Amino acid sequence: MYEQPAYGQYPAEPEETARPQAPAEPVRRPASTGVSAAVAQSEPEPEPGRDRLLVHLGWEALLLVAVVLLAVYLHRDRPELFRGAGLDTLLVAVVAIGLLGLAAGLSLRTAAPNLAIGPVTVASALHFAEQGDQGVVAATAPVLVAAAVGGLLLGLVVVVLHVPGWAAGLAAAGAVVVLVQQRPAAVVAGGFEPTEKALPLFAGFAAVALLGGLFGAVGALRRVLGRYRPVGDPALRRGVAAAVLTVLALSASTVLAAAAGTLIAATATTTVAPSPGFDWTILGFGVAMLGGASAFGRRGGIAGTFLAAVLVTLVLGLALLPDASAGRYAVGAAALGLGLIVTRLVEWRGRPRSAVAAVRPTTVDETDWGSLRGTTNPSWHPLLPERAVESEPAPREATRWEQEQNWWEQAPRWGGPSR
Image (cartoon, rainbow, N blue to C red; front, side):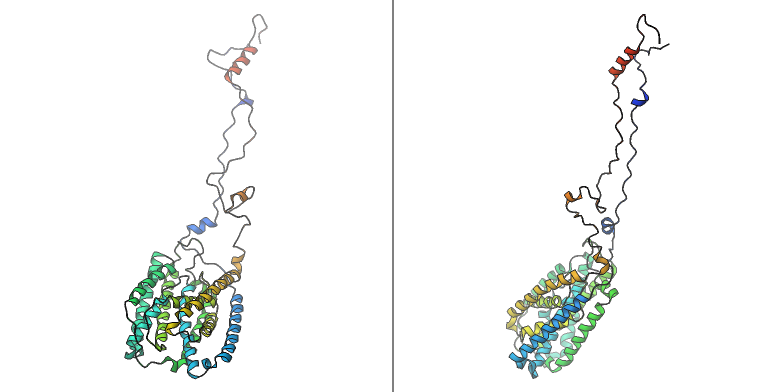
C-alpha cells in the first residue's frame, strides 16, 4: 500500500539525482628549486666550472702584435724615445701607467671598481713633490700608509653597507678632490731620479703583473677573488670570504695608485699642480679593461695588463707632462671604449663550460606572458592553486515543485486500484 507522505514532507531524492560529492583538494605542485631557492639563499654560490682562458690568450696575442708594430713605427719616426734618457723615461712611464692599470684591474677582479685611484694619484704626487727633499722612504712611507688605511675604510664601507664599489669609490674620489684642491702647486724637491733605476723598476713591474695574472688564472683563486661578483640578486651579501678579499683588494688598489703618483711626481720636470685626477682614473681603467679584465668582475687575462700598459704608453709618448691632461683623457677614453668590447668578448667566450648550458634552461621567454600559453614552464608558478579537472556534470536535480507534481501524478486516483 502506498503511504502518502505527511504534510510538509517530500519524497526522498532518487540515487541518480543525489548531489555530487565536493572534489578533493587539488594537489599543489612542489615549489621550484631554481630562482626561488637562489633568492632565499643568503650566500649564493659563484658560477661553477673553470673559465675559458683561450679567449684571453688570443686577445693578448693581438695586443703583442699591436705593441710590436707600434714600437717599430715609433722607432722609425721618433728614435730618441728608444735611446738613453728617452728610453729610461719611457720605461718609468710604463711602470707608472702599469701601476694604475694594476690598481684598476685588481678592483675590477673583485667586482668593486675603485674610482678613487685618480685623485689618490694626484694627492700622492703633490705630497712627494713637497716632501721629496726628506728622502724617498720618508716621503713615500706616510702617503702609502695613508693610502692603505683609506683603502681599508673604503672597503669596509663597501662590504658593511653592501653597496657597489664604484659608488663608494666615487664618493671617496670626491672627498680626495676636495683635499687636493685646497693645496697649492708644488715644485718637485729632492734628488730622487727613478729614471736611474728604470730597468729594475720595469722588470719588477713586469714580474708583478705576470705573476699576478698567473695566480689569477688558477680556478680556485679566481673564483674566490671574484666572489663579490653577484650571480643573482645583487643586494644579497656574498659572505665573509668575499667581504675580506674585497677590503684587502681595495686597500692594495689604493696603495698601487699612490705608488704611481710618486713615480709621476719624481719624473715631472715642472711643478705638480692640483687637479681632480679623473684623467688618471680613466687611463687606469682603460689599461685594465683593454688588457682583458671584465667590467663585471672575476675574469681577466695573464699578461694583458702589462701589454696594455706598454701599448698605451707608446701611444701617449711623453704624455706624462702636466700639460698633457687632454691627451690622457683622449687615450684613456679610447682604451676604455675598446675595453668595453673586450669585456663583452670575454664574458661571451670566457664563461665556464658547465655554466653555458645552464644560462637558459628553457627556450620560453619568461617575461612574455603570451608565450606561456600552452607551454609548461617549470620556473613559473601561479599564486593560486591549480583547479582540479572537473568530472562529468551530474543530472539536474528536480526542483521542489517538480517533485510535488511527480508525486501527485503517481498517487492513487479515486476509485482506481491501489498500488
